[in-house]
Image (cartoon, rainbow, N blue to C red):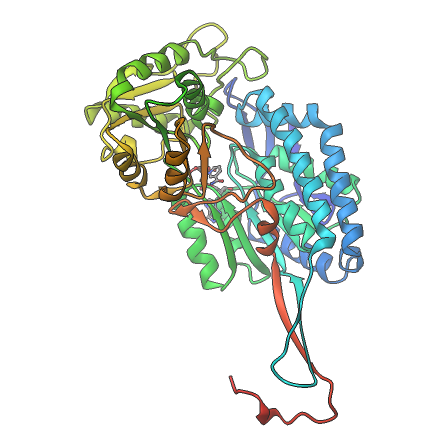
Length: 493
Ligand code: NAD
């Protein structure tokens, strides 16, 4: 069994604790590698390596164009190593190999996109209200960035945080989820191969309390970018605030997927199935609340059940598998608990509702595609994030009621609407309180489109040009061009 160390300053570093822990293949339910158990001493080492890289290393003296070329090469190496990385990811978190491979192709695109942006970060020269005074702004890297990531898409999260951070000239420390750290460690070695100077991208592993918290509190961290649950996010946010750090929080969701009677129902059913059963529902953007207009509710539910019943569950490495296991043992228990909660609240289970068994299903962490009808939006199954293959169907009468139910949630990550009425589509896109709105589609992403949440779904935006601004500080520079400029000419601050 391979034993993984931290990756600090361009090399493997054994944990100061001298301890490693197992990482488990959720399909087989067996340990397949060992991960370093990080502590504060390792956090200190990684942050200091990132500081050195930003201040005195070659990274500091490279031009933005040179930095962009390195980021481009990272994208190339992701493509060259796609089979190896996709297999590692699928093994570590149980996602389908087809999905991890598709995801990694897109990871490369992110690196290319931010490679191109590296030398397009511009300051301004301001029109001044005083004579003989030059006023301008510099856009400078904010400092060392800490990226804390969740287990469901480790390399995607690493990339959407680190590609813009590095394009801005920052250095980074990544602490991946303790459930799926291998991909990030292998990625860091590839980045070195691409020419990324030592210390610019460091990966330390371990548990949130042992090493995540000391990293957030570390005075050398300028920005904390987090993807995970809102409960942990709130703790991290508070700790970062104490140190007056910048934050970006990508948190959970309870997204409404809204089907009107005038939609193309076959397309909508396909979108609803992929929106909740893709990645076995372990997506922040899962369309876990399906709002269906009352006039088609019975018919649409039948359509959905017929499709979902056909989902092939099994080995993530098998190309014919459509749904894999739940990634972690605690998450498996949580999903089953929510199924019981839904039953006890009076929701009607029309499909699934128990652990899945059968040919090709081993390891014991599978849940059947599960659909609950007769859900009321105030039930816990409609309000709390399950993060599993469990769908709650809620009826609505008209547009006004769809908006009301859609917005009656603590979350605001994304929403989708299926309709053939373009006026309604546009009205809904404005009325729903979410960071991303989809019309007649679901789970559509682009590196050019900002992504993030409103309300408890988060703070800040990732992707697109906007993401780079999160990693830049604006410095105002005013220089007198006259021999003497008495300071009392200025409005005091
Ligand atoms: P989590 O909140 O348990 O953990 C996220 C990360 O934070 C992990 O690396 C963990 O080790 C670390 N951590 C835990 N406690 C910490 C502490 N006190 N200080 C610093 N770091 C700490 O999340 P998870 O279970 O890994 O992921 C599932 C959650 O992630 C779901 O709620 C899901 O909605 C959310 N998610 C959000 C998005 C998004 O983009 N909005 C994407 C995927 C997942």
